[in-house]
Image 1 (cartoon, rainbow, N blue to C red):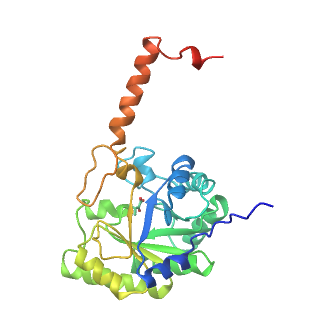
Image 2 (cartoon, rainbow, N blue to C red):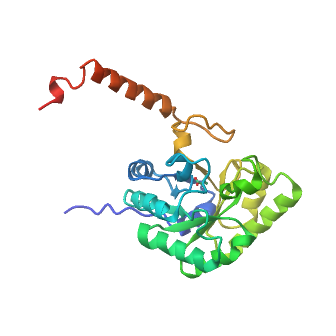
Image 3 (cartoon, rainbow, N blue to C red):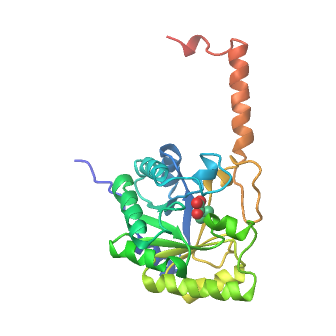
Length: 271
Ligand code: KIV
């Protein structure tokens, strides 16, 4: 008789219990089956199918061009790979800002066609109605405040947000609002560490930081940055665990050389 090895899946409730216990939440991006399988097997709590796929996968300068269909393709590939973690999928630019009905339709497509577990969208007060409508259909929503890359043309730069008092106050007010309307967690991107700490202490839902210091409930990074596949991006908040750009380039150079010199394939590498 085989013993059932059923895995206990991470849910939005698991994350909230982790915050209550003071256990930190780990989150990373993935956009494809192979990467998601490795990250899930390593024991990550949350995979974010981020609209950073627009930069990392498609080579666009911003996150704006990626479409809902493309996000669904990435998300479905990730979902096929994972056994344990929670998968959150970004609603891309233009798929939820129009009105709450549009937000609901987009979220439903992501849940139905990709099999995602939750969606993330950027903004506070200005998207509250959209968030409420998505939540009303039973779709869990993660918020995203601070540096919100879909608004890059409004901000003008990718520098730290909410350094001034009025923007910091608005951020704290938005954090409270997102908790009140029912978001299960919030990403805070590139804001002062003291402000992020204040935000995390002000709510009972998890605050997940990227460039927001250590005193929040979890951390998220773009996996390709952490692995050193993206080469020229080195913000202060990023810790690189590998330098894969160089390693992969070296491996490909070696392969090319082996082909050219007739070293590959050898006698054992043929039928
Ligand atoms: O799209 C993304 O990768 C993100 C993270 C940076 C939080 O939103």
